[in-house]
Length: 527
Image (tube, rainbow, N blue to C red):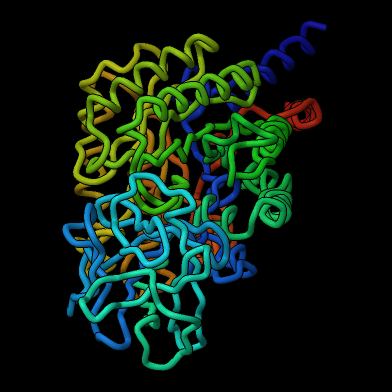
């Protein structure tokens, strides 16, 4: 009896070592992956999602220009809006570029560079750029030819034309052909970069979008993916969600329901495999950065200028914290992903973060509250100096050797040296700062090196792991699955481009009785 007791005592000591390796209150540091492109859509991650949208090159936010085929001049909202619309510019710049708000596959509203909408009160009138918000009088109907010529008409059926006095007027007589006439314009698509939740939902329409997105959510991330992560030593998933999740199953249009059920599934799968979850509010009302992953409608950033949007966002945090605070798989809640330094003032962000921290603490004393740094030119130290909260706080940094001309001509060796010099220096400085823990919430084993070999990628990945493993909270890779293979965590691991070299000690405590029992049996045999 005494011998048996001694053996079991050693067994439980061994289990304690497995389940309490380093870092966060007895848990290991975060070693994880983002589930990007799942509950918040990013078209570049899975472009095929958009294949079935009619007129798919004219989604919300697409930038277009119109050139009169008779005058050889561009349609222009002088001064960016506020007055009449002319057809008198030889060189198209900002005033001649309009952002689409899509009403249907053939009906659109046109937003100027300063935010007004083109409008026309009646047949025979001039088109002006004076409306602050769009309605029926700001809605125009487009007819397209095969060679990207267009006719623009009012709901009444009257066509717009470029008049001889260089005005845009709604008075073309009859129905125009595609020959050289005042009602025919060349359509130039300047950019079609936004492929987020707004674009896919508004592009397909509610019913079709619900069908497409349900199929995507049920297949893109599954329980088998959590098994893969567990088997490769990952202990955390960071799950991007959009603000509309709080209104599931019937969120405001054009968004469609289903993300809340999928998030519940993720928490259930995580619990099965002993994996922790970080809920990341990736998209806030009216967009915090104008990008597709913030569900921006047209590339503008309205969130910081709208007290109602900020209040609504805090309500979403309250909903998420209330729903998941007692779930054993919740590790933390990230209050906002990548607010723009160019558009979101620091004092606005700090105020929001402080309120969000209090809301999470109302529901949980232990969940980590994560504050993402502003993207752009902001210094992450600004958040360490802001006194955002006192318990279990984290600052999230996103490290990419991409998206900046600084990296465009670097060799593989120079990229690796940058990781060790610049990144490591910053991680060490923030680790030692008095304040939140350090989290590399997004990074990827990709760069601007055009002909990197397998060995080059392995060395680049090894450098990043060396440096990011030292972050006091940990890291999560962007992202688990991606059409671009080097962004795809699973592909990188399976093809040996990313060599994790993580022992089982990096995993969370074993997830269920069967795993624990198996571990006990192995230890008993060894003893």
